[in-house]
Length: 233
Image (cartoon, rainbow, N blue to C red):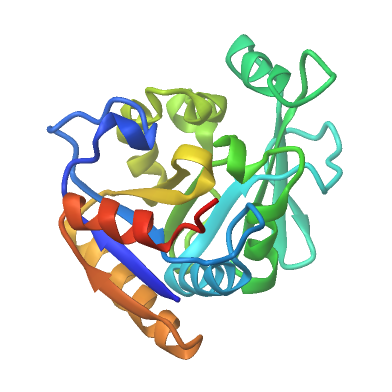
């Protein structure tokens, strides 16, 4: 099994929204797999979870934790949790995969690899349905205080998710990870080339630790690599 990464501007087929050329640095990550079952292969989950946690603080949506009505972030062991009241943007997203018309957005912020693994298999925010987002902050950073910039994190589920990056960078967010079409790829928007180089060095090392390789390709090669690895009917 191999990982592939391209820095080319992604085409619309990846369903990662409208990414402005003015944005900083972007990467598209994919993987070869002969597995018949859907979802992210376990080996890839291992690599991505280790890489994200090694970079720093990881913040994502979670339906497996309970949160009180206390405003702001609350400590839960070594992690932090918070809840934001649903706006219509999240209600539309949730309605695609939930019997409930509206839900609250619960966030988990962690630095542990084991907790990060949960984001790829959360039934309430399914990765395969592109109903997940991941915010990466530097090691030692606090969970992002969205109220400081009046930013609604539910906007990160929308097609224009990248437009909110300017409001997140003052909060210490260095990158945003979003699942692409069918959850078979991951788009990663970085705040800077330094953040990109650091994360991708970690990603390469983590891949080696789990017996995988990381290959840089252009988008055409990326498409061919992923297409050739898919099981045939």
